[in-house]
Length: 194
Image 1 (cartoon, rainbow, N blue to C red):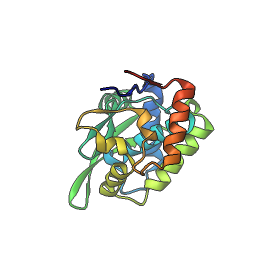
Image 2: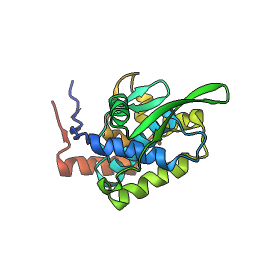
Image 3: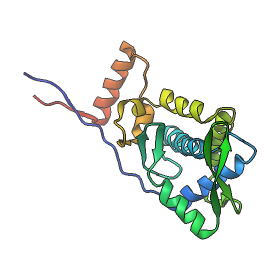
């Protein structure tokens, strides 16, 4: 039996710890008036910012590694970076009552260092924050489930590759398939096995 073997090329991205911490502080700073802002929303701001940046420019903002958790994608670097933020005195995580649950909130003790980011990166993050602002934690999680095909395909704890931003739940048309095959031939993305 003959078939076609397809190889997907995923590349390892460098994690920028300084940008990640500053992005956490920036998101918290910009969300101080959002009484729905907590750990869940922070996770999703980081996720959407990195993945949208990758989809638009080919580079994420921080290069963090995201994994599938029950409530949506989350960066594996979040907890160690949160400890560093607290140890450096740049921010503190507090618990506060939010309706019938407890919310963990990052409260910045200083302004984020915006010089680490391009104007385009800040504009993208601001747009993500604005889009998520009216949503509570559950709605934000549901949005990350609905918008991330890779999150739905991954197993709990499994890494979500940045290239997954290009996946779609829409059924491919014959024109889409033909164009994909044309690009794959042109750039050598597929190899034929016999």
